[in-house]
Amino acid sequence: AMSKSAVKISSDLLSNPLCEQEPSFLEMVTAFDTAMKRMDSFNQEKVNMGYSVFLSGACLVTQVLPCLNMAVKRREQTLQDYKRLQSKVEKYEEKERTGPVLAKLHQ
Image (cartoon, rainbow, N blue to C red):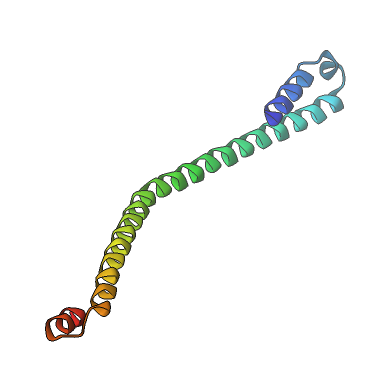
């Protein structure tokens, strides 16, 4: 918005009647107008590049998030399985050490 305002100001200065009377002022304002237009186009390119970088990053995140969610779900499932098996092991360790109990404990 700031560069658009600078372009507007330079355009207004260029249309000033004083430019018709003073060639040196016209040359200076023309150079200023050219510089402001170049600055505006450069700023617009930066904004467009920023949007494209942001959007590509956002697309990458949306692609990665489902994979992360699946990994978290797999971890939770594995943790539940581990806790279940750990409780079985503790139960067999508390029982009398007979042949079938030792076989199941080893398993």
